[in-house]
Image (cartoon, rainbow, N blue to C red; front, side, top):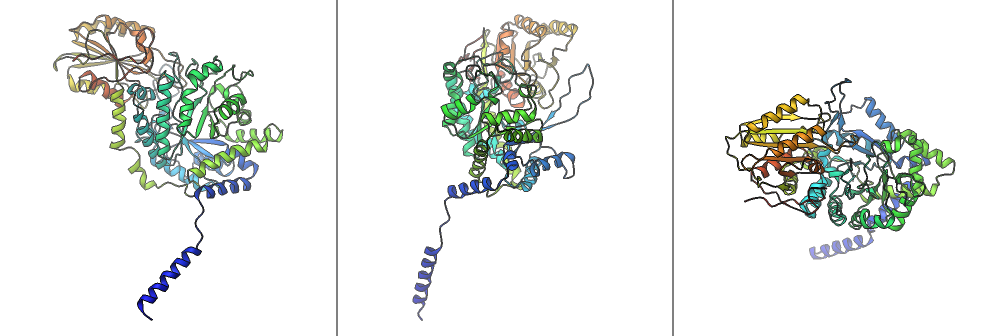
Length: 602
């Protein structure tokens, strides 16, 4: 037999064999079959479990620790559909008269990844895990990239930065086993007295907020993470923190269509696959006057029907006082599901939440069709992320994906481009100050407690001292005495310049967004002492609206953020190393309107 004949026979056999081999079915068909098969084989209790998002802190948990055993039981007995990943907390002394201790710490990326892998191995159905990474994985996890708050992105005016940030957050999230980011915030912050949204919003202009939110969604989506638009249908024009009480949004539908809803529409058009509903009451939408969390006209009516959304609907944290003070965990979970929510997040008691949904089903208040529709959406999301094929992460790859200089460079660019010179009445920025001159640097804090992760002035003060060695640094807060304030006022004229770092938080659960009145009086008095030859400049870290209360200061820089990046960027602008190119994404009443930018002197 000739060699050519042998080869020809072999080729024919290969062709025939290839033709006979069935083609692999399309991925969509495989996913759809998995969804329906899983749904059909699930018990009622397993279906109810899929609607619950439990939580854990990403610190070390041994297998036999009470904390891990509790998490394992949530998977094997309550059948939860996923987990919400937090950072960590530490105990503080239970003492009076000193409230300066902070309890919140960051978690660890390897611990988060390992814990999620361990829980995934226990789960009959893959877990869909979420995290509140609004401004990056570094918000909760040490070593992750921490971007500036959303309002800083708004000040840059560049949606491409939001898209790049979203892509980086997605890469780092997937590396540790997180599939859903509770971001972006699509709220339009047009209320200067909002104590909880504030710099978490991209700004006050609906079109700009929508453009930024849509870009952030595109970035997350490109990186394989589900974006969650929040807090539907709008939490920006409120003045009560939902961690403390129930806000009311008193606007009619026409106003919602004009202001609150455009960013959500743009985010959905960009491909957002999840929406978080706010614990906000909207009487114009629901005459029952209940939180949107419990409002069928808001969820099924406005979101599902009017906006045509068929993705995942998450509740906001059910542990917030807006809900937790109103009803029990079981009733709250049942009412949310009955109203149309797919996923009940962060209940104070997951077991009670599951029992509450089951009891409502047994009473006929929640139908099997209602439960199945949500479970099908949850399973579809899991299949879309290919969790049915691969649910574990490669822990060896975490260090290569989380953090790093390339990611940090993008965060630094956002920070530097966001700094806004909102006022410079005496042309004092950048500071024209010889190296040997004396500088009084004063950190002015809203209150000293709770600064565990981000210490005011940690980077700002050393950076100033590196430029001007003769820096004297002081810190004031609402706990400072009258004698201390008087001493600062007497000292200030002896220095060649005064630089104020003003730190005011819009922190969840605090309800505070102002400087103490006596600090406002002192800062204004220092501002009135300024002259072209003796500058006084204030750099605002956090709540930018505070600038309106200290309008006697002749020069003001806004960063919309806290921490090392914001402080470094502010110093670089002060020294003229970079220019302040940010534009106000909000209006500061009595000071400046949205979109404005003060030109620096050359």
